[in-house]
Every structure is written in C-alpha cells, then in structure tokens.
Image (cartoon, rainbow, N blue to C red; front, side, top):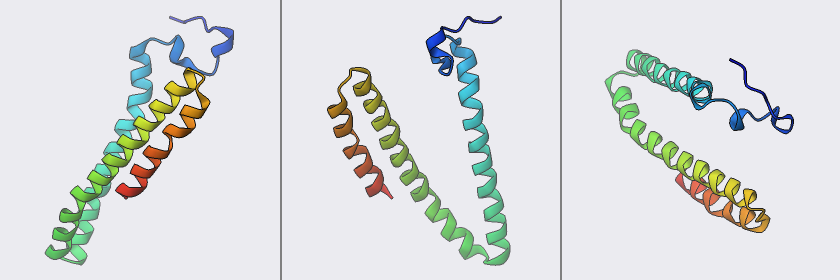
Length: 112
C-alpha cells in the first residue's frame, strides 16, 4: 500500500505515513542502540573482572546507576527542551523559542 505524498512534505514522513510504520522506523534503531549498550556493559564487566578483579567490578557497579541517572536527566532536559522549542517555533514565537533553550541547556550541563 502506497500513500500519496503531498509535494511540500516529501522529506518529512510524519504527516502521511501510518503510525505503526513510523513507530517501527524510529523504535528499531533505539532498541538496537540499547542492546549494544547492554552488551558493552556485559563485556566491560567481564574484562574488568578478569584484569582488575572483584574490586573493579564493585567500582563499576557502584558507578553505573549514577551514570544512568545523569544520562536520563540529560535526555529528559534535552528532549523536553526540544519539544518546547518546536512548539514555540510552530506558533511563530521565535523569541520565546530562543528563551526556552537556556533552561534545558543549563540543566543538561549541570547534570553531567
């Protein structure tokens, strides 16, 4: 089944492609990235355990939740700020869009 693309939206599929196709198109790369990250952590623990020992594994296990928390806060601020920016730009409020970027940038910078 093909969908006719409006001429002005040839590069942006969000307006005419069904949601289930978009979900697969955008979710699959994210899932692959998460699997690669998990595999990296497993292999990292293996090599640290073999070379440093149990204290090395303990140190990385203590630091892992802090790393994940910092990443989550940074993503929350970045994605929320991007959504705010896009909403302001959609309303043609350019000054408001510029002002909304200061807070997410500050929060992302402070969470690291």
